[in-house]
Length: 228
Image: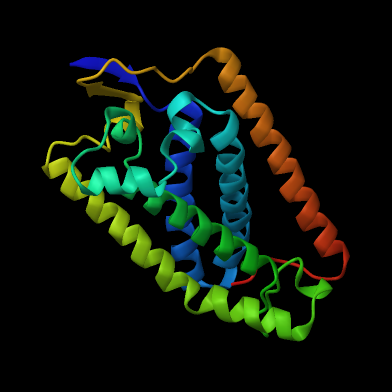
């Protein structure tokens, strides 16, 4: 067995930060009231994290790049037939990759629709004032309606898969904590240096600034808050 560094620190921090954000959003959304102030902030944070992962999917560590685990038909078929190569399952296996992309899309959709939502009582997304009432209604319907159960369903499926793979001794959880994975193949390790971590910090800072600027601009149009 060979120890291979699969997940760089920025990818690991992204993963656990998004877990905390999603949990926090669910709790604060159900509590309502003053907790909505935290809901707004966590929504902005979740949007920033998803945008970071998209950028990091192109410039991040070897196994964090989308090109390394994108679930092409060939990779999926090889995996389902039990013919997967080690590089197909060193990081995210093809089925896991489908789950990852689905979750990123769903969280992005939830965050984006929150920007345009309005609860008709006290809270409005910062961009709800720049679109039509019909658009706000559609965004609110998704954000408060079937968008939530979709995320809950996929998160539950993701957790179930981790439990099953852990039971089958295909370690998924521990590598996402420490970064390393024991493999039977000598594969490239993810670059995880001071330089790459500084790059991640610069990317994150730029995205925080961009999301802050977007929210500030929206609020300046006469709206406030993040859809409940």
